[in-house]
Length: 123
Image 1 (tube, rainbow, N blue to C red):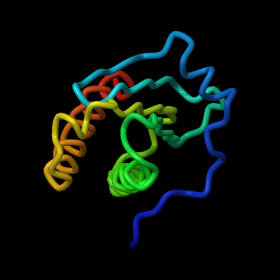
Image 2 (cartoon, rainbow, N blue to C red):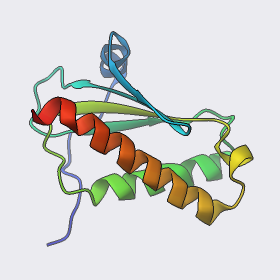
Image 3 (cartoon, rainbow, N blue to C red):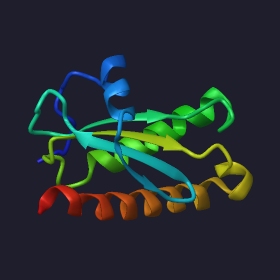
């Protein structure tokens, strides 16, 4: 069976504001992850990404979004009922200019962040 995102209501401005008010935070050298239980009490998780223009031109930012969305789409457990805001560090390409190396590092760090975060909601 093909894995895909369920067509759900995207995060809106009110959700972003909710996520930024006293959120749980996880930090790595490449990401800042804000997360809180869904304010609408959904049974599935919703994700949003924030990449500033400092990360790169639109082509680069969109590629990063596609990579991150594909990674999250293939994850097994999306039923936490948590809203996520993933902020990408703007120094990523200055630290790691090779794009394939950058992609692997991004996915590895994001996976580590998600694993450490899940313990807060699974208990």
